[in-house]
Length: 166
Image 1 (spheres, rainbow, N blue to C red):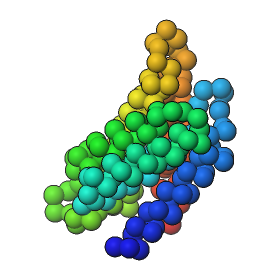
Image 2: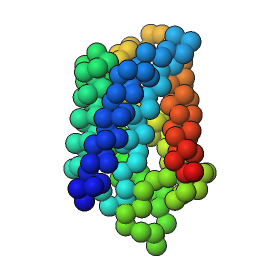
Image 3: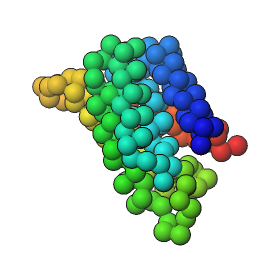
């Protein structure tokens, strides 16, 4: 139990530092930002307490907001994803699977895992950029931000998941 908590805290710190130091400074084509920290919230196991996932999501978002100067955007968006994730993950889990099943390519298979993670990342980017831009006057820029950030985030998540698989 303590070992899992320490491992989770270490990943928390790694994602905050990676976003603050490296990924937050990348703006591909002026609109696509890799938001790899979403991966942290998508990885809660099946039997993980819902209140704990909400707290992890909120505090991860809060620290990202502090380092990125985006007041409350990441915290609100990640808390929403953390609230949805346990219920959404149940749709992809076989009924006879273990209670502590963790979302991964090896546990779900590539197709199911991609079907699981794509809507969560897309929803995160939709909420994040809707709150950030707070306007739909420039729909092309909004769509490019959401689409570009979602695509680069998904590529990074799949790369990390493939590396973890080996």
